Amino acid sequence: MTLPQYLSIATLIGMMALFLWGRFRYDVVAIIALLAALALGIVSPKEAFTGFSDDIVIIVGSALVISAAVQRSGVIERVLARMSRRVTRVRTQLLVLVASVGFASALVKNIGALAMLMPGAFQLARKNDASPSVFLMPMAFASLLGGLMTLVGTSPNIIVSRVREQMTGHPFGMFDYTPVGLGMMALGLIYLPIAYRLLPQDRRGAPTMGEALDIRGYVTEAAVPAGSPAIGETVSEFLDRHEQEVTITQLVRAGIRTMPHGHLHLHENDTLIMGGEPDALERVIAGDRMRLEGEHDRREEDGDEEVGVIEAVINQGSPIAGETPADLALRQRFGVSLIAISRQGERLSRRLSETVLRAGDVMVLQGVLPRMPERLRLLGCLPLAERTVRLGSSRRGWLPIAVLGIAMGAMGWVPVAVAFFAAAGVIMATGLLPVREAYDHVEWPILIMLGALIPVSDSLRTTGASDVIATGLSQLAATLPAWGAVALILAAAMAVTPFLNNAATVLVMAPIAATFAGDLGYRPEAFLMATAVGAGCDFLTPIGHQCNTLVLGPGGYRFGDYARLGAPLSVLVLLVGTPLILLVWPL
Image 1 (cartoon, rainbow, N blue to C red):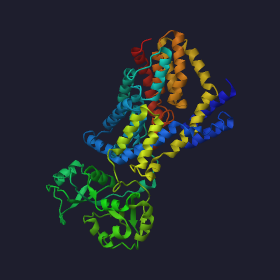
Image 2: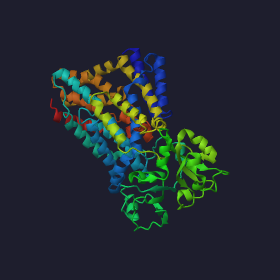
Image 3: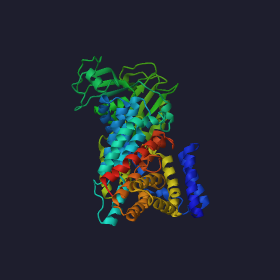
Image 4: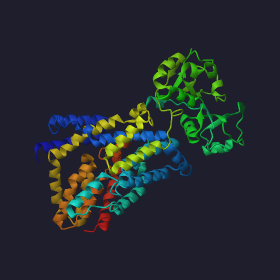
């Protein structure tokens, strides 16, 4: 081996050691590795920053924006809310999520399936008062296993099919992967809902200042429009359908306030004064297509300007303390609408317009966001630390799902990066997700890590170290029985993919696998299938596949957490996958 080859391998080993040590954050480790590679000369200055233009960076960043839009739409929440009434145990919920993302990954790119179902994991985690980390990594692993089932599920399958066509004249078909992939998926469905306990239960995404706020008991006012599913229900039926997440403190009908007795039927144009947490109120109002007080007029007046909501607390000495919103004419004089109000230690039951405001009250105000700072100064209110409050925000139902579906359908004609980037652009341009929120949901440290690590990992190829490794494997395989050679290819592909990413692993390993088959006098299909399975099964690191990377930040995982859950699964894939491949593709 040459000196650059030794240095390339040593740099990667040192990088892995820093990841496992955990002293530095993952993006800082990636920067250190890139600087070291530059200093040692194994990465040239010209190539140092090419990783930031790699497709993986675009795919992950765009997927985060798409996932945020899907989450904001509330569609996944409503579907899972129905499911969660019947499925209450964490293990069963995990099985449903793992199966959903796994089988969806067989039909569309696994990164797209994961992005679509991630919001559901957050919804169930909130409902169970659990960490999203319980769901996210198992879902990422399931998406990798599900992608093995069809030609379009993951990139390695497509590349392996092309290699077979070059060797035999016949590519792998759409469902040639299904018998082996389905077996791997069944293995995941058995293992993941049991082994998730290997993950630390306290992992959470990076906290924000807004999470320090524990404001509950908001009161809001919403009207029941024509066509709402609430019409004709009794108050008790309405509350039961929404799992008692909210309370109704008053009902206003034809201007007359009525106590909301359980047997009272709801009519069109009734106004409900409801209390609850912001997310619960938002789900009820959006799910029943109710209209918040002042919301419709507010949007008509502001036209195309960015309308949003903000939480603010009434300061001591505020000119609005002691007044009611009706007396203040907030919308006419100040250009804001009062959407909800919270008062510590007191349950409010009056209409919002009739509630006497006090210092210390927390309000949700809706208005044109660029004008909000000046409006809050005039009102004598202080904005609270930023956090997501969707009550009073616009929702477009199935539109974000439709955009994601079109993007995944287009992947047969355009590259994945182009499809995802276009989908993210459409989402931002059409207001399905405000631009401000879109940038907030991008996990920038993850993109920095990817951009810095790609040229470092590629140094294995550019220095020729990967060729040396391949030659050693070829010599070793010649001494093994047929099943041992297949197992070696599978294990080698699983070991290499964290450093070269899955597509590069196939490009390196598939020719080696084909050479094995020819030298040993066997058909190539089993060896090529082992390459595809191994390249698609990186369960040890967050850097070998974009699905693992996608859940790193939101799940609050550390580098070593992946091996806790992934190492036993990798061993199982090796033990089960080798005989299964030989059974389906005899030599």
